[in-house]
Length: 84
Image (cartoon, rainbow, N blue to C red; front, side):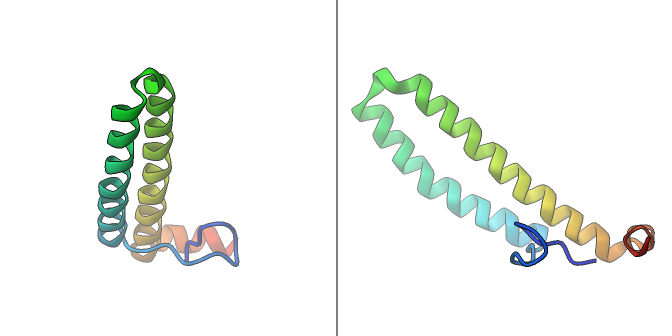
């Protein structure tokens, strides 16, 4: 089974190790922006906290999709379920 993001025509989901590397890179780049915002606008901490939580939720979704893709390649039960 091939797992795609964004529907049947979306890009194929990467393997979990590739997803983890992409997540790490995204976090490194976002961390600098978050720190700058907090330094320049400390009064907007609550907004920043919501944005950070949202970003982590999206990153978790990416990892779960990668795990699903890997599991589907290793599981005949998932293949059988897909054929139904």
